Each structure stands twice: as C-alpha cells, then as structure tokens.
Length: 242
Image (spheres, helix red, strand yellow):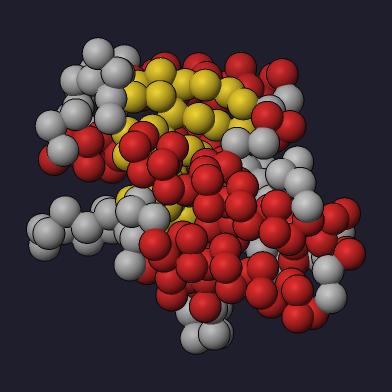
C-alpha cells in the first residue's frame, strides 16, 4: 500500500569536513512532506501557472542559487518582475499544506566535539527520516510505503546516499524500527516541483542558524511549516547538531 504522502529532500552547503567554507560552515538537509493530493492538485498546478505567467513556458527549473545570483532565465527579469515572481512563489508555499523537517549540521562544532565524526549527510538522513517517520506515524501512515525523492548528485554520492538511507530504514535509528521508506534519486532535469521547493527552503534555514538576528522573510514563512508534534520535546521540525 502506498502512503498518502510524498517526501522531497534537498540540501544547502556541502558535507565536506576537510574543506569548510568560513562564510557558510553548515550543511542543511531539508525534508518537505506533502500529501499527494495537495501536491498534485495544488502545488504543481500553481507553480506551473506561475512559470507560464512569468516566462511563457514551464521548462524553467527553480534553483535557489540561480534566483539569488540572477542567472539563466532569472537574469532576464527586471526588479519588479523578480519581486512579483518571488512574492507569488512565497504565497504558493504559504497556501500549500506541507510539513518541513530540517537538519542543520554545524560542521566546525562537529569536528571539535568528535575525533572521528560521521559524514554530515548521513547524520542528516538519520535525524531527518526519524522525524518524518514520527510525523507519518501520527497520521497513521507509518506502515504504508512512502517514497523519499532526493536530488541526484553524482554516481558515487548517490550510492553512498542510498547505502546510508537503507541502513537507517533497516533499523539503525533511535527506535531500531524498520521504516517503510523507499528512496528515489531524481535528476534536477526532471523538473520536479517538489525538489525545487525543497531547494528553495534549505538555504534560508541555514542562514537563520548562522545569523539569527538578520531579517529573513523566507525563514519566517517556513517557521509555521516545521513539524511540531505538540510535545515538550524540542528539535523536531528543526534539528541543529551538535
């Protein structure tokens, strides 16, 4: 039986512990959980309509770094058109029911605390899947097969990701439970709206942790989407490690 939900995963920063960017010493893994009916009936049509209205076609891939640096199709937009586009995109995210789980790895602290730290990507996958599974359990969906869509990063990286993913699903998690997840590695060229939304979320979350007093409109929007199971346990929707 397939789940009523689908999960999209994207990242911000890199997982290297040998070469750490002093300006952004973080690795962020963002999990966006959406009910399939909301995804198919609300999110996808609205994003496609926005692309048609803005560019005249829907072949544009929404990539956070391209938007931020005004590259590719986004170099053609003037300030007013770009502001209108970002405003409409933000409203789509606000209007679409979704649940966000983000794991932020502070790489310098990780190296300081552990003499032989785990790969930040593997840490992020474990913490993220544990929390997504908790959300699904609360919806009565924990035993249904839930597909987790991850962006392709290269043959070796994709193999390592799948191994880490399978390890967590086979019981290497905080409850030693078997998880009913299946990974789908998807190329960016597939133009998946779910992956694009996850990509847009990851960096604002990282910037909030890096510079919490800085104005961050995108994070303020996402703050209402974080998984909150209504318990006294903190760090469910936004896990910062270590």
